[in-house]
Each structure stands twice: as structure tokens, then as C-alpha cells.
Length: 167
Image (cartoon, rainbow, N blue to C red; front, side, top):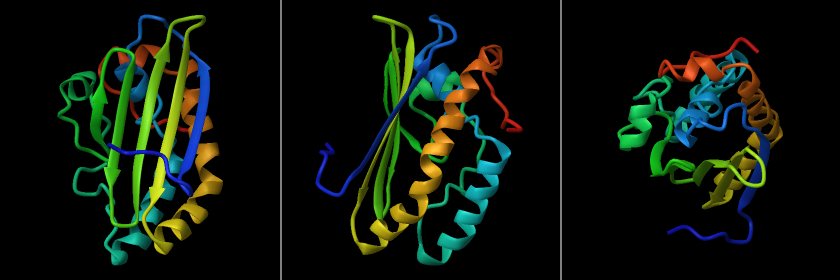
């Protein structure tokens, strides 16, 4: 069980849900796993730079987005492993020697239909704090861009796959 500690990074952003029938798994595919190409380029550069330090890169699984069934069954082990899944919330995460990372996609129905993407990062050491300092400027922009996908891709998720967006 992870608990918030001083020095942890927490972020929470919300958007309107385009379709109240979508599950949290559907919404995760449409947000967390539908990154624009420029984010994929940044991740590629990040992976190239951190590989010599022994950080996890997700390369062993590739950047293929999961299907709804992968998430709901807990089988997906791509960039982040499924930590928790219900119809209302999906949490993905990974632990590494420099940081522990979790991202939650939560669908709310009352009082309105919203999607919340929350992130938590716990740095373990100076390297983790430096890493977080370097990544932070990009984080809010990337999450905002992920949430903007909700108005663009609702039909694609029903097919079980969302390709990377051009934005």
C-alpha cells in the first residue's frame, strides 16, 4: 500500500465525459494510451537518455495500447501494469529504483459525468527528484492533451483499439 509522503508529486485534472456509458477502461484507452506523436517522440528520447541509468523504459512491451479486455482482466503489462480495475476506476503503475508512479482514470456519474486523471509520483532518491524536476514541465501539458482526446475519439474505443493521435 502506498501512502502520500512529503515530497511526493500529486496532480489531478478533470474533463467532461463524452459518453456516460464508457467504462473507466474505455476512458483510459482514450486518454492515457492515446498519446499524440510528439509525446511518443519525447518518450523515445527519454528512453534513450535513461536506459544507461537502468530505468524502466517499457521497450520490452512496446507502446501498443491495450484493449478493454486486457485492462479488465488485469493482463496488460505495457508501459504501466494494471494495479486496480473496476467499472469506475482503473489504476496503472510501476515501481522503479528512482520513483514509484501511479496514474488513475476515474469516471464519475454524479453530479455530472466527468473523467479525472490523477497522478502520483514518489521519488526515492536525489536522482528521482531530479528526474521529476525535469519531467514536470511536460506533465500538465501531456495530461491536458490526453484529456482533450475525449472529444475526438469516443467511437474508436468501441473497436478495442485507439491509435496514437496526430496532435
